[in-house]
Amino acid sequence: MPELREITDPEAWNRLVAGFPITSALQSWGWGEVKRLSGWEPRRLAVYEGERPLGAAQVLLRPLPGGLGLAYAPRGPALSRLQDLPRVARALAQGVRGTHLVLEPEAGLALEEPPPAFPGLYPEEPVQPAFSLWLDLTQGEEALLRGMKEMHRRNARLALKRVELAIAGEEAFPEFFRLFEETNRRARLLQHAEAYYRAVLREMNQPWGEAFLALARKEGEALAAGLFVAFAGKVDYLYGGSSRAHPEAKAPMGMHLAAIRHGMARGYRIYDLWGVPRNPEGSHAQGIFRFKEGFGGRRVWFPAYALPLSPLYRPLKVLLRLRKTWVNLRVRGNPRDVLG
Image (cartoon, rainbow, N blue to C red):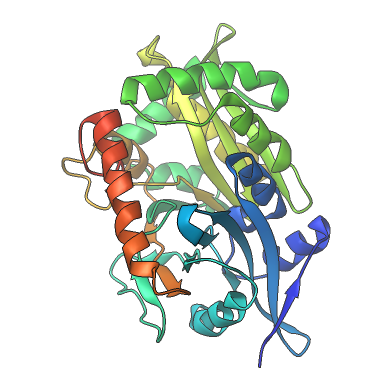
């Protein structure tokens, strides 16, 4: 019978989850501290068979009215192989309270791969984006440029001539946040308070990981900026924004090139463009998809599962879906999810 252990030391936790082949920055200690700002309680639970770690999950807990509760492992658990998910899930259920436990291991399946079925686990709507694009940073910059679509490759070379690339920390946060807010207003997207993104930049600079800002400037003015986190050999593009000024400078491309070069210099293997729509045609994020797919790379997806812990699982699932649809209608006038 697998044994459940709670880990309370940040460095020990990050070392553990970074050692699994299937893992994510959202399973790192820092992400749990960020989510405390949104009312979640993180618990770091490791599942062992003897002295061998079978899996580990940072589970976020949130009570709801009426005795309901959510238990959610963002892009987790960390696993050696996806086949271990049922045993790890059952062990984790002994250490959490909630109506159901949502799991979305960052397996990075190819698009044509069907979602594996596991007894006792039900297909679930993921909380994080289900589809993404991964770039292989180990191939080097020239090979990566050759793998881009022709127009992207041309724009990349223009950006290298027309903007200054920079990697920065908290001192550049006002530049990033100004562009981020401007872009979200333009696209009618929801966002957290400013303190949340400052916390991401602060807390994700942690043992076995880092957070940084990548910027593209023209004559000292930031035209594009992104907030990135890195963990366990992978760089994730979480948040970004750009100005509509000087479109000829190709600043968004320059911002990504700055982060890609930083990732290569640090020896990271994967660059995650983070979130593309399942069906690009007609999606609110169709433009995002066109931009991201121009980089080439490999399109991957992450199946999500639910382990019911209460008979109220199905009614709560319906209520949560209705709430999400209502928010979409209120914010954008469209019931579809941004990446739906």
